Image (cartoon, rainbow, N blue to C red; front, side, top):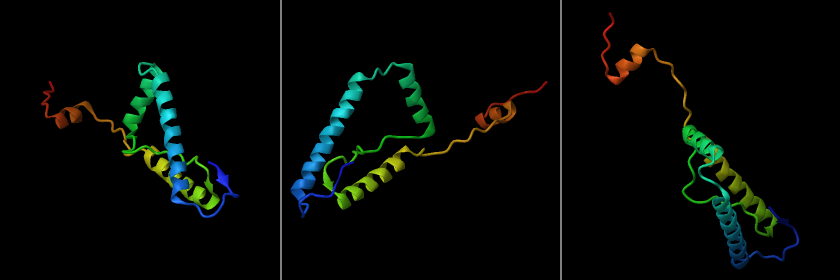
Length: 118
């Protein structure tokens, strides 16, 4: 994040759009690089993806792009805090799963299986 104290006032839509375009291009390049250099069959990659699925972490509907463009300090701090909130919202597990240990008879009963004990 770049905090700039000496930018000329005022900050116009043109400057904000330029900063956002820079951020979008930077994000696209990073994403494309990771996609082209990551082997989806790598055991570590598969393990991390499986852990994310099990913990309920899902990707956001839209990309969360870090605000790295040059902005005046107050605007940069506002964008940075919004970014941190979005990241925290989408990295926290969506559900907490607790493992419940069931006796074999209870497990079968819940599945509707009748077990005869002799």
